Image 1 (tube, helix red, strand yellow):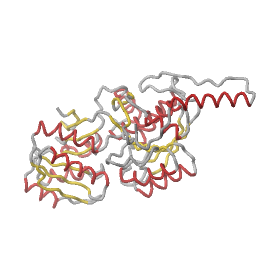
Image 2 (cartoon, rainbow, N blue to C red):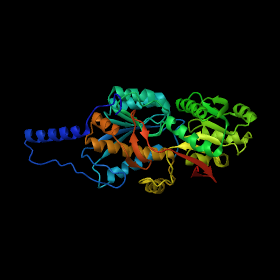
Image 3 (tube, one colour):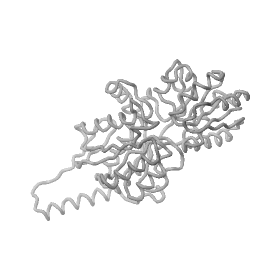
Image 4 (cartoon, helix red, strand yellow):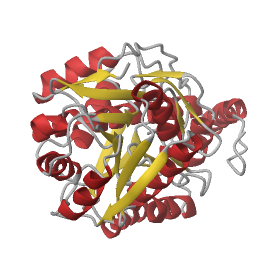
Length: 397
């Protein structure tokens, strides 16, 4: 059980809510029954509640993390549309979207507006790890459920009972990824490069160095840069001189293309692989082109996986938006279904009941695989390792 997490028995909530409904009917002399329909939709399987629920969504519509084809927006939109249109589910969602503006300040403003003006019980967001500490504190203080679908820095969810994350965190992805890749590639001497201004990148590099040391791998050099840097020549010149077996990169997605392209242009040979934690997506690979070849990523979703509903998601997303989904779209899509599962299990639109129900989710079928929340509210399921071959992702084997 989660320490400090709401000690609410879901079965008791359902019984208590049902008894209140009966009492209200008797008092008000209403001569008709209100029946909650129990349904079994196609994957993911959820039950329904008859009451529409307001869900806030905070993601970057402007700023450095925004894009013309917004995978976060599209993933959320597709899942909400499917849930609302399903005849097998009574869960009905009404979204209120706010721009996180790619900044901590923007996300804080969005959370405050959704909580205090719109009175939402649930917020899907924020997008980045750097935004999580401030926004999760606001959600917890106001007892509003917050679920971040893509932040991955370790150690951010344990601030209270109302906050959750569905992406795998760096302390899960990195040890698994190193175990898988080091066994096959046999690297013994490596370099790391990270963004020392970004929380995700900082924690990622720390986890990398710890895991590499645990596996007996020598770290020749650790280089850093600052967010939105344009010139990596000094860092790669020093790294190249040491001739490492592999180069580990910890960065947000916005800086990855420049890093990969400059690294190859500055003479890092392709037999020295770039290994990127999470921040490598299909659209980014297409942007980078040949420089991405052979790059390895530790990640939480594979578009080719035979997980429940995954191939239908890839097909429907591609048909609707004219582009193939990225990991960010997949994570947001899955998060909406996980929220719907919590709402259905709670049989309530009350934030406290939903938070308690979410905390109890175990083995729920999603496109990510069988999904559970761990003791601190982070997602738990099987990670994966992918490699870019001929411009496409393949499972690293």
